[in-house]
Image 1 (spheres, rainbow, N blue to C red):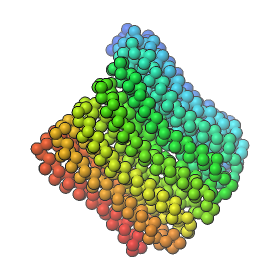
Image 2: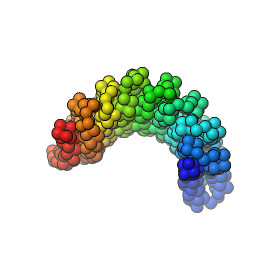
Image 3: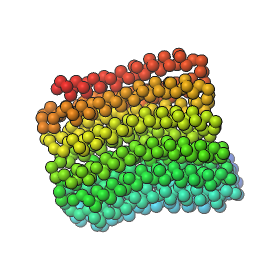
Length: 613
């Protein structure tokens, strides 16, 4: 089909968006820098040209793929679908384009402020940009292979979509490494004598972020080379591609952590070993979320048969492990703040490390839930020829709820590390708050995990099993809002205790009150999800009400986050005005009750649909 072929070529050249924005931002920074320091124009111009050339290359990759699609690919249904995959693959470079542009702008800005450090800044810019550029090259290579190896094959062209999705994982790493490089350039300008230490930190973090892109590249290659023709090859390829996309969160998170680690080393060069250890600890935990997706993708490709309906469970398995995106970024964000805090107070590194490990472990658990569900889908449903394979997608949607908690707990951990860095003597109180709030946020992920398991174990057959699984998964997805909201409330509570340690009991009560009300919205979804599975018969027509019930109760997603946000500000207010805690508590209760009502409306409608329709 000419239309799909044209769309594929269009998507390919869209990769230039990133470079267009990135180079524009870099030019703006360069212009401002020269305006402040006209005598540095030569050095700034060289940096701008260097960075912009690398960023520009990401757009050229898309241009070449677009041309090849137009010139080489013969119009036809399957090859035209292949063009979409090739376009998506090379569009990966948009991340590197904007990342390199951001780094270049920062390099120009600080080279003008410290002209004698321009050679060191140039080296750092070149190092980081080369690593970021590599993520675009992975997409370019996959795009070329799709055209050259799948372009004339109507039977296998559809697997190109999965290969394109897989390598798109590099978008996160491309942006993340760009952020890290920007931080490194600023750091070298501020502390030129520490350039060696900063370069090592940049290389360490960027290598870990780069790995997430490599996972996607490898899966893309395997999809092209190993997934042959078969009735269900497209579902297997899509499942593998979706699974490895979980690494995007880690790519961004590790990049952000590396940026702050570089700035921390510039601030306190003597603490570089402590900062590096923290970066390695947090990045390793974040990286694990990408590895879960990589493993699930490998199992999908190697264990499932493209010629049988078993392969249709692949998409559900892939969606399940996407849960790790929240934890991947959340842990990276927490690591960044831990590095900041150790730079400002090196003597607190032991306490901060413990907090980072505690919070990251709880956040990591949400990714593990998705990993386990993905494995069970492949191993239990993939081997059951009598199963209704579409139910796997419902299990994936259910456990995907954990994205909220994974990010929320990461946010809370970040603020707790900052708080302990400022007030080390309050670490015991802050740790208790972090544990309390994170446990409540974690529960929202557990609800999704339980429903996902029940879908796998209970819905083995039935005419409407797929509808029941999707309805129950959608229902429990309501907990995503509460996961983020409770994490946000906990983060503010930790900061509040650092501001006023004597008010910790009052702050704890507020956090518990607000979090309990936020948690309730997740429980409503969990209850409806359970009732859908336990009360509705997959062999009867009324099972179709499951989707309506799920849509109704997911209304609570808004209240879950809103109540968390209200609790967060209440904790901050009590720390500043402890004597007003009674009045603040009443206001919080009043507002949360009204917000909670919106979730209850959806819960009631969901119940009535299940019981009366």
